[in-house]
Length: 316
Image 1 (cartoon, helix red, strand yellow):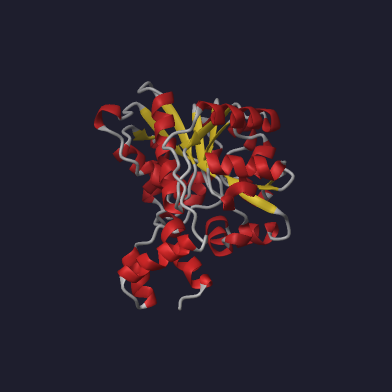
Image 2: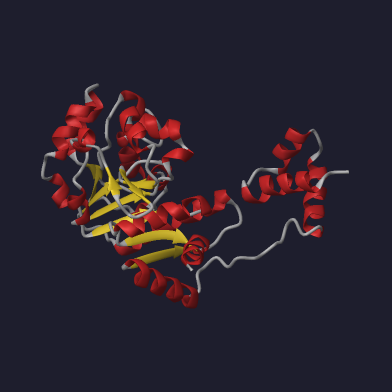
């Protein structure tokens, strides 16, 4: 007889992680028919409760949450996407909602867009925009990181040029020519340091980035991207997450070392960009989003209804 703990693990793998029944069955050494029986049993025991979520956000819910975020954080624009059953679908909804927001908000007029790194921006850059909706007058600017190395350049989630090239391929538009040298040099640090000192950042109309989770959750990845010295420096602080390579703690204080400042766009320059967008969802991002909103850096948050409710519940 299967235990309730095992039923939970099967249900979690299927409903939350979005794994196929065949794959779960193979891992457990049973048939996929048996997995179906386990899922039904989990429902009968109350381990699983099936809910049906509408593929839209009602006006009442939207207004309630927008009013709350405006009052608490002065957030000008809360963009809500529907809830989803699995983590995989949550993220897909988030990316689709971000694409729809950008396309509906900004026409094919000339637009300069700065973007951050990470999974969210990678997936967004790979969203297939219809040919009729392509934005051929948009120009993309990778927001500099602490360092640019060949390792990061080839990393799917942390490669500037890869994400920029995805945007031009799937969305239309071009990469600002100032970044072309990054593809032809191994000394990307010096190129980025020079770009940070240039005035191109004052031309940005929009800047968009994901919200990173605390350093403690992904120490190896963070060290690879931001460097050993900074990771060590921040280890003793209550870092909630990062946005566009700036780290922030639970009190909304922003942290950066003087050594790495030469590779960063000044925070005051980012704050002057007309529209600053953060994209994130999921229970593991709740405290990170809270920390970012306390910083009063962004004016637009794209998230799902569940995450917005979790944030509201946490504060209450």
